[in-house]
Image (cartoon, rainbow, N blue to C red; front, side):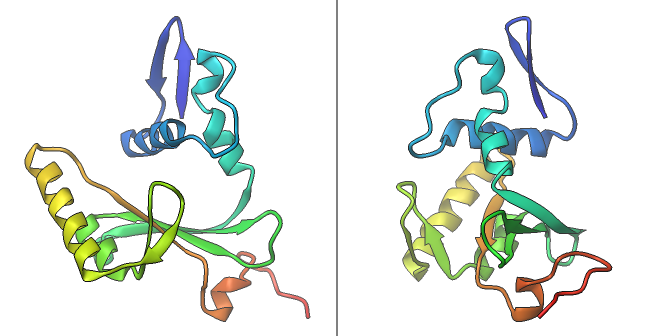
Length: 155
């Protein structure tokens, strides 16, 4: 969580989670006006994004996967999406598509994979902590319609 008080932003909780919230605020959302004031800017876009989804399940961090995932259902869709964050060397090889800064999605090529790997390595040498984020929207059937522990899908 990010809070604004007395002219300063501070984080509450895990630094990685706070950094991701800051990233969302910096990226903004197409067609959505900026926050009306500094206090609202602490979680303006994060709140809007969070309202678009219901969290269904969390796959906690695994040393084997070097990532953690959250299964979410968009509020206006019956199908789930999977959001993943983790070590670039673990997440990048699993990616088949790439979302560009303009919002378009393209097939992941070996050239792009190599460019991204070089960028991650350069950042790690500085030293900056690197984190890859990814999403998957075409899930296998059991995960696509999963609603959480103890629930059954009707129909």
